[in-house]
Length: 113
Length: 442
Image (cartoon, rainbow over all chains, first blue to last red; front, side, top):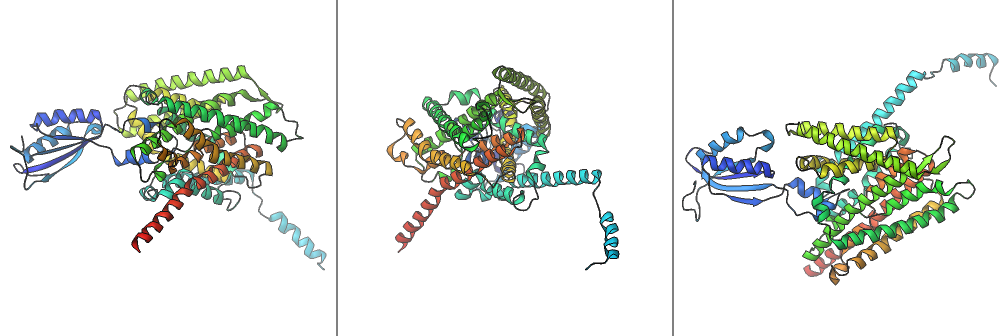
């Protein structure tokens, strides 16, 4: 992950509502108060829905799996604190994600807060 | 001319020729079963690989794979008609495994019937599925009765004897294939709705088909003297038992899931244990494994929490389970079908090709636009539901007679023809596109 004070783009995927709920708590705890949340679907869900063999009724349900992508520009320190928080979560509720260094930003007044 | 001495010498040679002892025969049979299971499970496992998934991105292949065509061909090649590596009879020796497969499919179909999903079924879809089911049952039952009296005129069979063939053929005609991706090019919001209705209708039809076959097959009772009787009271008792077992196992499953830490491995263990119990209870008590597991699936599908991951786990194995049954059906295929069976096949294919889309277009007249009436998505309705193959296999599992294998073969051949015919628009469309591109280029 990134070094302490550098700005990073944090990308996290919470696979379900439970996992997302814990993650929001963690973000707030470490001081990340600005983030964008995007409803998402995993590739597996798309493949399953594309090619049902026996069960087709799910096609009538809203296209949501509870999976969400969280994007935030923050600092490396916050990411490290979040890593410590995530490590304490049950394995099934840990999000997956990555943080990449950001050279420049547009429209952010105070990135990292 | 051979001398007497030579003849005498030949006697000990014959006597010393290796004759397998009962233990050796048993060991060879066990090895045959092991090899057959190994081959079929390996083939099923291949269907879950990334390479196989990638192959299915091709629309024509997607349609053919969903219809089971490649797996049928593999089954036929491995079966008694060609290589004889995987004998159908050998596979039927592993009934517990087949029962677990049946239970797996029953649970998948049952779990989709959550309160949320059922509430979202539009009225028009209920009407369409009901009319399609009634038409399918009427046509196919009449067909089997007429052809049945022609097929077996002198065997002294009763109307009760015909019940099972009627049930199997009728059930196989209910519904259609849920696979629409292969037909979903140039989609508009209207055609997307149509695709959802086709998939949803297929799911509803699967539920109805299992209910219909599961309940009515319990009416059919074979006595000790090989007579076939229809016993409604016994059927009511059996269905009540099915419900009790499914409810108890559903509650047990809930209890066990609550005690897991939520880890994947623990959930898999609970799932496999429950499926084995479902299959075991059904086999031991002579109940329909599909019906028992479907009711169990409905129960756990409507539990508040923790079942989503279970559903994902089950649907993850959907293709592998389907391939297992497709290969099994291919290996059990009878090639010497009488002309009466071919008449049944011809009528069923024509029924699917002509009547099914008509019924659908008529029922959805107020919902779809004119341009959607001619969309090739309607080809999905002409393809036989994969569940029909599973029901055919479960029939042979109940009793591996020549008639039951012939009925399974009818279902398999209808499936192959309807899949190929249903995929024809893809090729036509593909060539039309190519021609148009060439014209544009010149």
